[in-house]
Image (cartoon, rainbow, N blue to C red; front, side, top):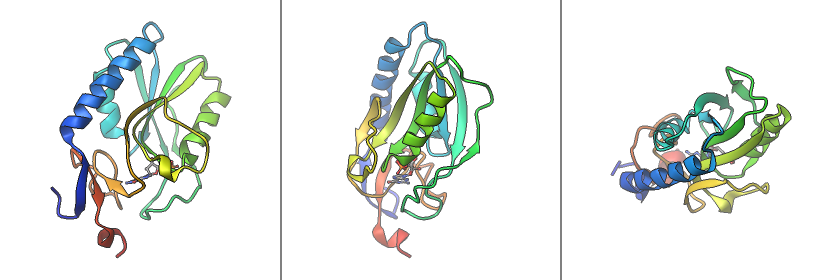
Length: 179
Ligand code: 5GP
């Protein structure tokens, strides 16, 4: 385990198994719909890469980058599109692929944007859900793991850009982010 972690929450094997299940669920729900998977950078990079390989139907991939926590561990509530989609999405069945839903502000905003652009449907796949942090009413349609209201890193999730490459997810020691 990385020395900056207090404990491991979800192992590499658990992530692999759960992602395979989610992929099978999505493949069943979207057969013949040629869904557009939108990965939210940077946190969802690991998850979207693993997820789409488990969705064995024709699909397309695009990415958006939106402002999030920055170097702090508190949500600012400010959401800004830093990188937009390459192609229009009118009429497309969209699966937004996100790392974690905390307050829900990011996804609530994004969902409204995509609906406004006339996607045929918008669903959310999040590998982690932190319902204890919620401030708006939003629930991922496909959820990997429910996690406690603590600051976690690994599998794409960072603190000040570090730890994204850990293949598992753990709780960061408080002294590391309170410096
Ligand atoms: P929300 O808008 O739902 O509060 O926050 C969503 C974003 O905040 C996530 O995409 C993620 O980038 C960041 N975030 C929320 N909780 C955590 C956490 O426990 N650890 C890390 N590293 N990022 C988090």
